[in-house]
Image 1: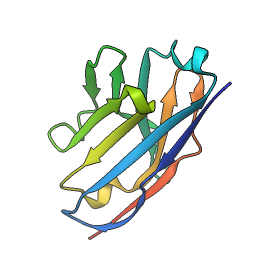
Image 2 (image 1 turned 90 degrees about the vertical axis):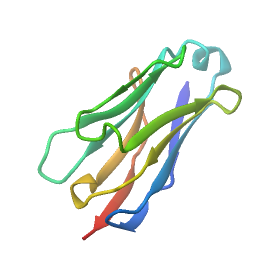
Image 3 (image 1 turned 45 degrees about the vertical axis):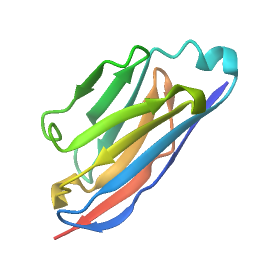
Length: 114
């Protein structure tokens, strides 16, 4: 079994920055099979959307609304994926969840005040 634990959410003013972390723990064997890890978000009343993901080889993919503002990265030694969020906007307010295939974290709330 693999668990994903997010951290780093909180309240920030528009224009500010936050960094989210997602740590994978559990079966090292199963962690080694993870090919893509990503961040998704869901705002109240809206569908969940892809924020960014990163492959084992380091290739990245971003949702259109965050391109140029957010950066996804990973530390293989720590089994951790990061999401650096800059120039935050009120519309970035959402629960951000980490994903690895069929596995989801519980999510962390990001609130951006205007």
